[in-house]
Each structure stands twice: as structure tokens, then as C-alpha cells.
Length: 239
Length: 279
Image (tube, rainbow over all chains, first blue to last red):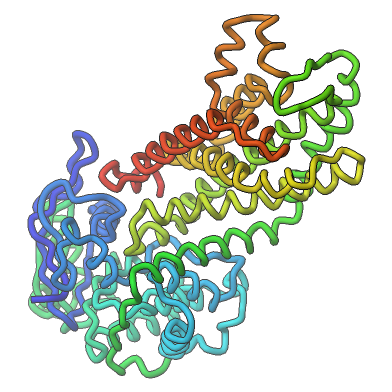
């Protein structure tokens, strides 16, 4: 299976264990919401998935490439949107994307074609020449998602991408990324603590205190449809 | 938003050598853009050594006697003597300034973006280093041009021959900054580190006074200065400005660059958990 596989990943900062035997399996085209309260270990897991840190125990496979044994091939298949904006505010949107494309070895006509397609996909074509500093929060996020798609990844990781956005921007970005998974074929791991960003057909993994305490379609985890209440109950039960 | 439903096309991967070159080119471009946007940085980079050259050196000209030592074939004025040291000063300050930029990048999150590139981390850091070195060299040439306007000139061939020496010295000092940046968590802590690095390195070197002069005051101090990599960088530049090679200085500068780069790579090793420290 390609997509994203996390097998028995554990991690500790010194004596403090922050992830305990975390396992996830996301087939291609799957949207998985990683739900977890603050301090659950989501950001640590993202740092491991993007190889900002190396895995101490367990295994991560991205599109069939082991992140430890073949990090370059695995990283080439990952698009990532971090919780904190990583746009260079003094560069224009298109320059930010060109810089990113270059970090993946892309330049010239191929890069230009990919950048135009990614910006169009996020309806950011008209803002390509604007400085990132001049964009509002929603447009900055869109620019970051467009950037994450430039190199044609098969796995898209988003760490709380709607933090600080207004309701309309949040809904638009959430819907668009769902489309990228459902019809674009991307494997999406979307970390959040907001249950209303999850659709009933999404896979949901609930991470609490470094452990996955539930991993199933949203409709199975919350048959009543109230995922927020179920999430609170689950994290309260194991507190 | 439009056309989200279209399947995402896979991108043909460019040849490896081309991918490496493209990444380095854009990292250099980005640093150059940033430098152009910070006009004060060029002015500060020029004012500092020019004050030393036109004020300090003029004042100490009579007090500091210099004997004829290679590469000089005759007595030289003190202003001429300290030009290589001031070139080194520009490289040193700029190396530290670039590493300050790296700490800033870490705090702002853009370092994460760089480090999640599929290209080897060593290559990405080397590209950063090359970028900061090229900007340093630009500043050195601007300084030499202004110095020439004030009548402090060097052999014409020296202006060309010094280029590789500046590159080697710039890489070494940039690598030092890179290594330091990997150990510093917050921007505000960096000022202290700079004071503990820049001033001892600069004053305990042959930038302002020759080592034989230092030996008259203290043999130990002279030995410390001789062990200082910055001394070797300055001597490499000094000889190159007279179109002469100082192989020993080149060797020590190269060795120091390799050690500092090794420390930087170790510092940015993902196994060391950089994220926890704010990358």
C-alpha cells in the first residue's frame, strides 16, 4: 500500500515520553483528521513525519518509501503546511513558490507550469505578484497550500492549518483540501482540535497523551454525528 | 477556489546535479534579495571598517612601528597594514550576521521549510553558506573601493587574487556562524554569543598588529593569536592582496572551515531533535 503508514512510532524528550506506539494507515486518496487536544503530541508527530527529527522507535513509510532508509525519496512525496506560517513575507507569492520549487530541484518552464497550476487550484492566480506580507490570513494559508502542491506530492500534511482564520476562510480551505483528497487522489493528514473540520466519511485518529485512542471513520466514532462531544468524552475518559 | 477535483499530476524529477544547482542558485538569490532589502546593512558593513581605517589607523600610525615582513617588500603605512584585517572584519561580522538570520529563520519557521527539502541537509546548509559568503565578498570589494578613493590602494593584481582567499575565509567564518546558530535557541541570546566570538577573534589576531609585535608583550598571547583561525584567514587575505599564496594560512583556514562545517552539520542533524530547540 502506498499513502502513509506510521507503525509503532514512539518518541521521548529525555525521560518524557510524548508518543507511545503510534500507528496509522492512510491509503491513497484518504483524508485523515488527526484530532487531539493541545499537548497530545500532534506537532511532535508532524516533526517526525517531515524528518525535522528522526524516529527513535517505529517506522514511517511515505508513498512506499521508508523515511529512515530513503529520506530523500520520502520527502519528495510530502507536501507540508506547518502550523506557523513559513512564507517569506518580503517575497511575493510567486517568488515564495519559485523558491520552494527550487528546493525540490524544479526550475524553468516546468516549475512555472506547476506554480501556475497550483495557484489556479487555490484561486490565488490573481495574487501571484502580491507580497506575502500584504495578504490576509486566509490568502496566506492558501498560498502555503498551493506551495505544498507545487512538486506534486502524494501525501499532504497540514498541522492545524486553519488556526487564526475566520469562519468563511476556514470552511473554504477545509472543503478544498477534502476535494484534493477525494478527487485529486492525495493522502491528507490534517491535524486539528476542531471537530467541525471533519466530514462524516473522513478517517479520524484521536491522539491523546501520545497514544492513538481511536482510529476509525468519523461516522463510526460518533454515530450520533456529534464528533465534538464524542471527542471530548474520549479524551475525558482517558484523562 | 478552482479545479480542485483535477487529479494531481506527478512531477518528473530533475537530474540530481541540476536539482542541486537550482537549489543553491535560489538560496543565493533569496539571500541576495534579503540583503538588497536591508540597505542599512551595507552601510553598516562599510562604516565599521572605514572608521577603523580612517580614524583608528590614522591615530595609531605614529605609535605602531612596523618592520618589513612578508608579503611587504618595503615599509608600509599602518593603514595599508590593517586593510586585510578589516576585510576579515567584514567577513567575520557578516558571517555572524548571516547566522543571526538563520536563528531568525528558525524563529519565523522558514528554516523548517528549508530542512524538509528532499535535498541533503548538508547541501542546503552549504548553499546558505555560499550565499552569505558571496554577499560578504561584495561588501569587501565595496570597502576596498571606498578605501581606494581615500588613497589606500593595493597592487591591481591583488584585487583579483584576493577573490579566492576571501571566498575561503568567508566560508570558514560563515561555517563558524552556522555552527553557532545551531546551538542558540533564541534570537536575543545571539547578541551575547556574538560578543564572545567576534571581539576575542578579532582582537586576538594579526588583524590590527603583527604577531611578532604581540610576542613583545606576551609569548602566550602570541601563541593564542597564532592558534586563532581568524589570524590565518587574515594572513591568507594579506598575502593574496599582494598576489602571493600563503599555503600554511590556506591549510589552516581550510581545516577550520571543515571543522566548523562538521559542527554545523552535527548541530542541524535531525537525530538531535532540532524542533524541540525551535527549528
